[in-house]
Amino acid sequence: MATYEPERTRNFYLLGDSQAEMVQLIKTDQLFTTAMGGLLPEQPEQEIAHLHDVLDIGCGPGGWLLEMAYANSRLHATGIDVSQGMIDYARALASANGLDNAQFHVANAIDPLDFPDGTFDLVNARQIEGAVPTAAWPPLVKEMVRVTRPGGIIRITSVEWGGVTNSTAFQTLERLMIGGATRAGLNHIPDERWLGATILRSRYLRDAGCVNIQERPSLLDFSAGSEYCQPMNQQWVIVFELIEPFLLATGVATKPEIERLRQQFSIDALEDSFRGILYMLTAWGEKP
Ligand SMILES: C[S@@+](CC[C@H](N)C(=O)[O-])C[C@H]1O[C@@H](n2cnc3c(N)ncnc32)[C@H](O)[C@@H]1O
Image (cartoon, rainbow, N blue to C red):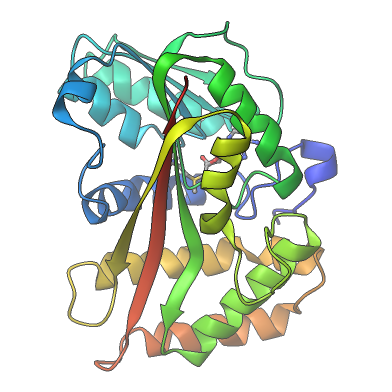
């Protein structure tokens, strides 16, 4: 049985490191990119045309970065992730697709980034809000700025965990996850109903010296009848299994309670009346 032991593993990610997590990331990568309006929907065409070196932090199995590398063969794409399994998969996919402009390294984002100052035109991080402890965010964003070239972009997309649904089981599981996140040092605000990830990104960018900071919201509607309903609800079922070691380790729930909620959510998600929306925010700024 998987365990949640961040002090030993130095991996704070609440869903852990497993093949099942990799599978759900492979399945949902494209859904998130589409819901957000594309790979870099907020960046002007001329900005994208000038990109040469791109870093993706917490790249997972590499979906976003490999699409970037595929779309532009002049681009030199670098991905880092704490999980050896994710990096092995991303490398295998790059190789299978002949993308020799993409490289991947195992690295922990809570450590200083192992790149010289001013290496990248764009430093991206998507959905690592459940992985990096609150206290580690300001130093991480400073590091993201350090490795960016003057005039380059630092871009962070965060999900406000779980979203809002009309399933009592889902809402209860989400509240338990956020309660656990508070105990594990992953919550950004003193309110166990929200993770607060979205509201602080622009402040971290400002505090790290960025200018021209902007924000763009997006949402993913996974209600019954929507194109995202089935794939997202399959994903939630996996997430609610993977979250169990975290909920047990943080002492916010018991095994039978989690099991009961998981079963109830599987039923709720099949109802015609099921409604659910996930809210995301992309914040970006420029290195002066
Ligand atoms: C929710 S996934 C996001 C993956 C990808 N960025 C995406 O948007 O599809 C979070 C990723 O962060 C990685 N991760 C967790 N803790 C990390 C750390 N301390 N340093 C680097 N990567 C980390 C996990 O292994 C996982 O691949």
